[in-house]
Amino acid sequence: MTSKKLQRARDFEKKYSPYVAEELPKFHVTGGIGWINDPNGFAPYKGEYHLFYQYYPYDTKWGPMHWGHVKTTDFMRWERLPAALAPDMDYDKDGCFSGGAVEMPDGRHLLMYTGVRNVRRKNGKIDSFQTQCIAIGDGVNYEKYEGNPVIRSEDIPENGSLHDFRDPKIWREDGMYYMVVGNRTPDTSGSILYYRSEDAIHWEFVNKLASCHNQYGKMWECPDFFPLDGKHVLLTSPQEMNAVGVEFHPGNANVAIIGTFDKEIHHLLRDNVQAIDYGLDFYAPQTLETYDGRRVMIGWMQNWETVGSHLPDQQFMGQMTIPRELSIRNGRLCQNPVREIENYRSVKIAYQNVMMTGENSLQGINGRFIDMTVTIRPGNEASMYRWFKINVARDGEHCTSIRFKPATNIIRIDRTQSGLPCDIVNVREFPVFAGNGELKLRLIMDRYSLEVFVNDGEQAATSVIYTPLEAKSISFSCDGTVLMDVEKYDIIVD
Image 1 (cartoon, one colour):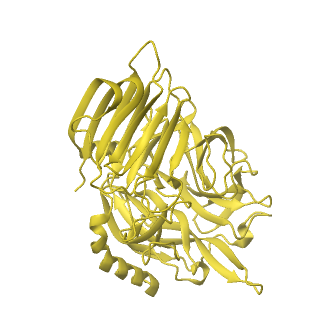
Image 2 (tube, rainbow, N blue to C red):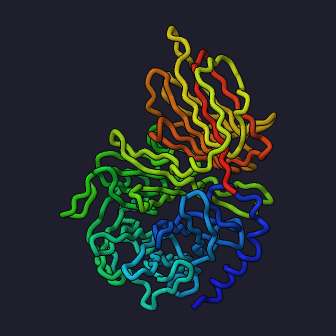
Image 3 (cartoon, rainbow, N blue to C red):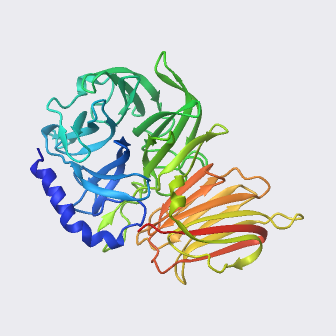
C-alpha cells in the first residue's frame, strides 16, 4: 500500500516534472525535478536495468531522502518511473539513505537501504541511528518489510558505530545473498563490513572486508564490491580525505582498491589503490553486471563541495555520469563510456594529421551534445611542445579548458569561466601515463557536463559546467608544434 508521503512525492513529480523537461540534460539521468545525489539500486531486473537515486523532489537542496526511479535497456534512453520509497516509517523517518537492489529467485525485486532515525539528546545534540532495511516489489511499487530493520544495532560488530553505518550494496551469488556496508571504527576512520544471508532477512556478519586506518580519508561511504578481469575491486567514497600528491584530492573523494579476495577469511588483499575519477564532480559510484557480462558503473556527477552552485532559476539539481564500462589494464581500473552511445552518433566530422601551432579552430568541430576524440603527438622531432589545450563550450566570455603538459604528464581542467555563479573549486590537475608527448582524449558533452577519458579510459575526469548553451565553439592551441587527429560526432537522443 502506498503511504501518504510516497503518494505526495509521486503526485508532485507527476505535476511539475513536465515543466522542467526542456532544461534537463539530453542523455544523463536526473531526477526530473528537485534534488538528487547518490545512485542506488543499479541492477538488472527482468531484462532491463533499473536505477534508483537519493531524491528530494520539493527543492533543489538536500532534504529528507526518498528514492527516485528510472529504468533503461541501453543506458542512453531512460524511462522515468514513480518515486519508489519515502521516509514514512519510524525507523526511516529522517531518510531512506543509499542502498542496492537485486532480483529475487521468485522474480520479485528487493531493495535494501539505510533507514535513518534522528534522536535529539537533552543537551541538544542530534544522534543519527542508521539501520539496514528492505522493501520488496514488482519494479514499480514496493512494500517495506514488516520486520524492518533487518540489520539492527546489535548486528554491528563490536566497536562499530551505530551512527555511521550505511549504504548497503547487495548481490546474489551461489544461492546466497551477500552485502557490503560502510561503517566507522573507534579510530574515527572507515571500514567495509561483509554480511551474508540465505533469505535477505536474517543476516550474519562475516568479517571486515577492508579497513581504512585513517590512510584514505575517514568514513567510507557507498561501497561496491565485485570481481573484474581476474581480480576483485572495492569502490568506496571516503569523507575527509587528505590530499596525496595529485592522485587524491582533499575533501569527499573516490577510491578504487584492486586486489585479491581471500575467501577463507573474507578479506580483500590490496594490490593497488587509485582514484576512480580525477575530475571536480564525481561521488558514490555503483556498478552492475550486464546481461552480456560487462561491468558497468554510474556515479553522482556532483561533489559535496560544489552542491551549492547552480543556475538561479534551475528547478533540478544533480545528475549522473554517463554509464561506463570497466576493465583492469596494467593493474589499474579503466573506464570508457558504454558502447551503446555509438548507436546515437550522428554527423561524423574527422580530421587527420593537422599541424597545430598557436591557436586554431576546425570547421564543423563545435557543439554541446558531442562525442569527440582528439589524438595528439609532437609535430617537431627536434623539440617537444610545451603545452596543448582544448577549449570547449566557448564564446566571447565563457569556456572550459583541458590543458596537457608533456614535461610533467599533467592534465589541468579549468572551468573558472564555465558559468558557475559561486566561488567553488574550479581547477583540478591529475597525472596521466603519456609517453613521448602522445595523448588521446575523448570528450563527452551534454547540456551541463564535460566528461574526459584519457588514453582509452586509463583516467577519467568529470565536471559540471553551466556555460550558456549558445557557447558551443571549440578551439585548439599549443605552445610549440603538435600533430593532431580529431573525430567528432553529434549525440542525438530524442
